[in-house]
Each structure stands twice: as C-alpha cells, then as structure tokens.
Image 1 (cartoon, rainbow, N blue to C red):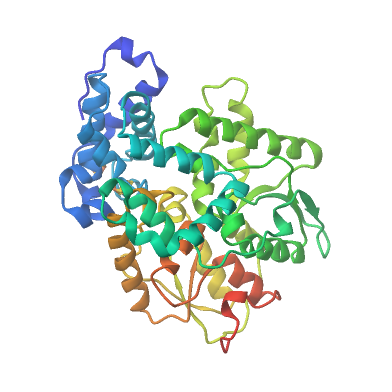
Image 2: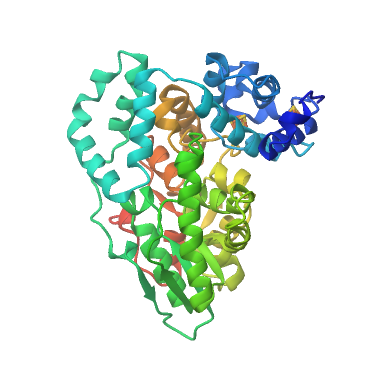
Length: 436
Ligand code: SF4
Ligand code: SF4
C-alpha cells in the first residue's frame, strides 16, 4: 500500500512503525474471510482491510479520530485472526495498538462511555477491587434487565450478567511465596498469578503449582506482581499499560538476579500475548528496553513450558475433551499444537470444533463494551463446540472460560487443571459428581 507521511511525521518512531506496517498491506482481502466482525456484520469497515484504511487515513492526515473510525476500531476484538491469515505479514496488532492510543489521545467519547471505560480500567486490574465489584454485581444481577433499554447502558447489563453466581474464596496461592519442588529439582520458574483470573478461578493457579512442583520445578510467586497491563493496553491507555509492564519487569528482573528463572509462567493466554510484547512496548525506554526484552524471552504459556518437560503417556480415560484455542493462544502467540498434544498424551480424546479460528467474543472487556456482537460470537462458538458432544471443554484463557461457561452446561476447565488431574492431582471441583 502506498503511503504519504511527511518526514516530520516519520520522525516519530511510533508513526514510522505504523507506516512500515501499512506499506506491507497489498489490499488482497484474504483477512476478511477469517475476521469475526466481518463474518458477523458483513461490513468492509468491520474487516481488517477496512480498518487498515481507516487507520491510514487518520494517521496520514494527522487528524483527531472521528466517530466512524472509533466505531469500527472499537468493534475490533484484537483477536489477531487476521495476522494468522495475512500472507504479507501485516503486523495488525501493533498497528491497531497505535491507533487505539491515538484515539484515546484525540477523541472525546460520550460521557457514559468514558465513565464505563474508566470504571473498567480502575477495577479489573486490581483483584481486591474486582472482588468487591463482583460481590456488588451479584446483588445487582436480578436488575440487569433495567439496563437493556438504552444503548449506552448495555455494558452495565452485560457486566451484571457476566458476574458469577458464586465467587470462590480467595486462595493462598496468590500470595508471594516460593513453592519447593517435591522431587529432584529440575527448574525454577516465576508464576504470574494474574488479576481477574486469581479472583474468578484460583483453581487454575493451584493446579499449576501442584503439577509443576510434582514435576520437580520450584515455583516462585514474587512479591509485587500485578496485572500484565493487557486490559488497559487494549483500551489505548498507554501510560497505565506501560506502568504495569515496568512494574512486572522490575519484579521478574529481581527474581532473575536473585535465583535465576527458566521461565515466567503464564496461565492466561491473553496475558501471555502482552508479556511477550513487553520488549516491543518498552523498546523506546532506555531504562527498560533490555530488561523488558529479557522478560519477554522468558515468558511461556504453561502448555509451552510443560511441553519441554517430556511428560509420560497416560492410559486412555474414555473422556472426550473439546479443545477451544483462545485467540491469544493460537493467533497472538501462535501456540497451536502443544495444548492438544499434552491433553492427548494425558489420556483424553481431543476434538476440535469447526470454525476454531473464530473468537468466542470474550476478548478482554469486549463482552462488556460490545455485548451484542459478543453474544452472537458466543452463540456461534457454543454451537460448534456442542456439536462435538464433548464431556468437557478445555481452553487456556480465563476470558474464554467465563464467556463460554455462560452459554453452555458442559463443564469448561483450563487445560492445566485437566493435566494436573491426569498426572496425579485431585479431580477438579467442576467435575465433582461426574462419573469420570
Ligand atoms: S483483530 Fe480480529 S476482529 Fe480485529 S480486524 Fe483482525 S480479525 Fe478482525
Ligand atoms: S490479508 Fe494482509 S495484505 Fe491482504 S488485505 Fe488483509 S492485511 Fe492487507
């Protein structure tokens, strides 16, 4: 694609990067067929190619974002299916990240939209606040319908509907600690316990620590870790995202220097995509560029790391698992085979749903901010999964777990919970009462 940025514009490294991404797009449109919003809405402006044109026009003319551009960029899930599909290697992820920062700086959103976004940014990344908000939301659940009348109030309806009916008790696993290996030590890792996940489903990190320590890995939960920054990063809140990234880089750098780390383990693939990008996000910060790149190189999804540990084959269990690959897993991190191979080796019969490349509609805060598109994608995903008639659904991202669980009665677990069970851990509580 031809571009016409001035040399003054290109002096800004972020604009120069956006320009080089734009130039790679050859308008072929292959990406439209695999874009969930194009597939759902059928509008070229809700396709990757359409959004690329909107971003080009906005950046090239150095103009504030307008309503039309914001509408179509807001509808983008950042699922990165287009990145997997694109034959020209267009780095849509960094282009849309840049566009979102530009929108945040130049566009004045309607007051209720601004308020909702501010509340999400102030609550979700902080487990204490998030837990308190979920308690309140449980009380408000019966009144969710009152918010359905006005477009601007629909995110509040979505928030109330998504709030779980029962909230697990806080788990000791989120507290800073070093968990010693139960057998000869063969590695040392840091575990990101996460923000929303640690509140919604602490069993995931508990299973991770049990499994790794049984396999001879020391697991450190370092003091001072926090949200990876993905939630606010996708809202274009650059400073908050970078502050969260710097804090985590400092924490893990201290651990690297104190005892050495073989990996930083992440059990939510949405967080993994962002942490693997810290090196890029902080590349212009001389005090952090090197440290951030080192952390990104150590970041591993739990299934990526387990694949290096050569786990034994387990006998068949007669349990069919539908594996849902989160977008951040298959597109963001390009991890496709590892989770399925691990589940198969652990004795599960693994099936993959049709249209596995399409997002379930969760996408960070998307199911709150864009509830209608999200609901359509959820229904499509659940239909494809249920067609397999699985006993269990497995996935590697808490956002997908929450989203899909709200549309099906089939139990949905994190892949590592099934692996922990298969390799000597307790049966997951969600499967209590099942005959397996
Ligand atoms: S990130 Fe996903 S929703 Fe956004 S343009 Fe690409 S395929 Fe479409
Ligand atoms: S597939 Fe790639 S090159 Fe083709 S239109 Fe989409 S982003 Fe551009």
